[in-house]
Length: 363
Ligand code: FE2
Image (cartoon, rainbow, N blue to C red; front, side, top):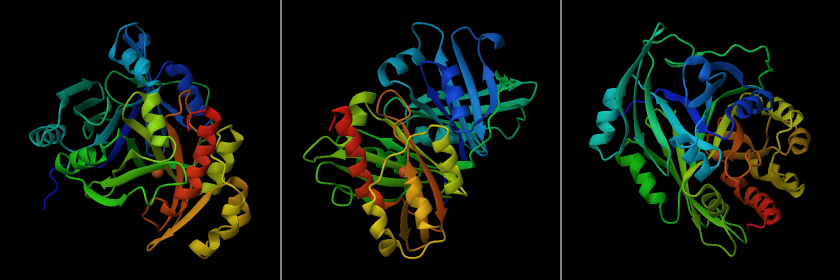
């Protein structure tokens, strides 16, 4: 069957934040992103400011409102600092819009052409879960720094990158009984297929549970796991997210590296905090996953997790939330063949998250 929505990859993720300048500094300093583009008062905007950062194929935009009443200010008031736009690269933004709208998507932005001295970009957009939107970006006739309206962000402050390469997957948390609705949305409206599903028997501890379906586009470049809370003895981490975020939203982006040991060592040096995993995990993990190239001692020191599937193994680790609210966090992942998402680590991971929830009094 022909793919009615061919996607070339993630173009960028835009976060609406309370203070874009400081968010940009944090992602530069702690995560090693490089300055790319800027728009604000100096470029003629009066109501908002945006900083664009890049590391290899990963582009993040941090946007803050300069005025009291705006979509951005409302978003930050409601959700805290949170992902607003998950932008997807396409060859034809009008066709992407028409195909998804005809299948039931809610329009966010009608197709429009943006031009400046560097060429043109065609973009369009649709709504997805919560207040999150997808933009479709066609940048084949553009060679400026980011998109028209942005100038190159010139700054003397540069940090070394930490080896992050691309976005492996982005997870959406949705409300009670909404997982199927949004998995169906990605299937029916965007032509994605379901790779895997986990139910509360796979993902539960003594206390909390969640359910998840992993949706992928046809070439596998875009993978969106969708989580919903499930009933446990105590409050699910997904429920905690939904409460603090005031509804559905992006929970984490998994950032891929070719050398997780170097990347995580550097991130730790720069102050990024990760979930702690008990010593016992490392006593039995090799029995579960078999031989690996890395020294277990090093992985244990850094608290990196290991899992294996039919295609190979993967190494992964999760940060604590990077915001005031316990909402958005990151996964760092290195795939050595494995195509899955670390199911074998769920239990250890969720017990670790529960320890953090207990400290916050939200379990
Ligand atoms: Fe993940």
